[in-house]
Figure 1 (cartoon, one colour):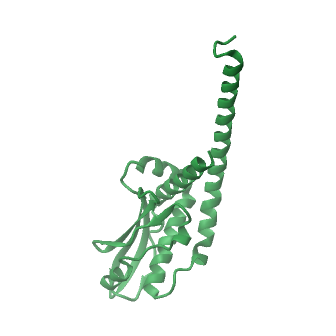
Figure 2 (figure 1 turned 180 degrees about the vertical axis):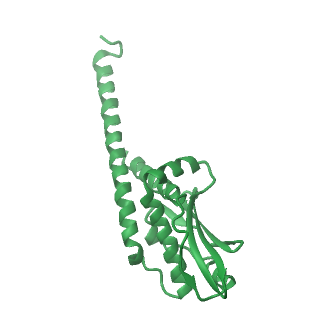
Figure 3 (figure 1 turned 90 degrees about the vertical axis):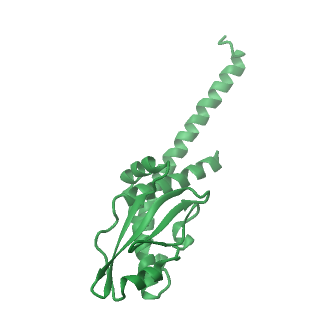
Length: 192
């Protein structure tokens, strides 16, 4: 039961992240004093550190899609749940970067979008993680979880509430099943 609840919690977090991503985590963004081509190259093949994501979720290496860079957030079983985009636009000889988080197009898309709508802090967290990844890579510094701690805390506190509700529902279901089993045992299954 506990392992099932852990898996459900991981899926809730991943689904919430995907749904929140749909809410485009930022149309505004910083301008880096490097050309778009160089920015793309610097971001390609980077990954968001796993310690920032927590157990159960990781990102694929960045890949170039047009002028943009795309990372996928995946569960440990390889299910893609979110698309994490760094949108790169030339601004003279510099690069303007905005971030978008959206559900992946797979079978979980609808559920993830619904969860993100209920828990926008999850999308905001993933947006902050992508912004930190971009900034650290393009400025040549290490990724700093401390820079996104506030967003992570907000997202996890909301997800914890859903996890707690799921645990209570699971406990209630177990209680009902035990009651039915006891009733059947005492009544020999015939209702008498």
